[in-house]
Each structure stands twice: as structure tokens, then as C-alpha cells.
Image (cartoon, rainbow, N blue to C red; front, top):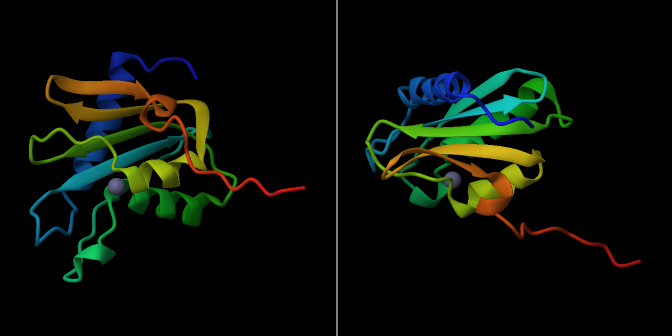
Length: 138
Ligand code: ZN
């Protein structure tokens, strides 16, 4: 994909921030939102949903991904992922989310997330260069 211009970055980050306002995070107080831009041009958002059984908690990125597939089907492709939080914390996607996203991102997809020095843009493949793949033996 072409690099996002600064307006596109700001708009996608804003959609992620708006989604973070819906966060269900009574245990950590960490309010996260994600916005996935599909190759169709649609943007699908999600937020983190915690559970008293902490391990069942789902991150904003996976929440958005599940929503995107549910809404637009298994053929979706993602060219940009934005992650934001309302806690002023650096928050790149966690490893589980990177692996989940790997099945749906374009090879040149980008990820936007808050870092210590502002919004950072990284190539998805920089964040997860060796995603797990199931290679079936012949
Ligand atoms: Zn995650």
C-alpha cells in the first residue's frame, strides 16, 4: 500500500481513540481501541473487553478483527491497523494480536500505535517477521 499521509494517520488514530471510549476494562483500567482499515476502504473498530477470569480478556485489535470478519466475511484484507489508548501509554499490539492479524494483513500493511515519542508507524512485517504458519507436508 502507499504510505498513509498525516491526515489518514490522524483519522485512523482518532477512530481507534473513539472506540477506546467503549472499553470494558474494570480490572486494569487500560482503555484501548483499534481501527482496522480494510482494502475495501471500510474501517472497523474494536475495543478491549476484560473478564473477571483475566485470561479470557480480549484485546481491542482482536475484538476489531472478529468484528470485521463477522461483518464483511473471511475474504477481508487489512492494509492499516491503528491502536490507541486513553491512558497515555505506549502500546504496540501484543503478540497474540500480531499472530491473529497476520492471517488478514497485506504483506505491506502498516501498524500505527502510541510510542513514547508519539504515534509510531511500523510495517506489520517488522512487528511480526516470522508469524506461525501451518505448512502441510506433501
Ligand atoms: Zn493483543
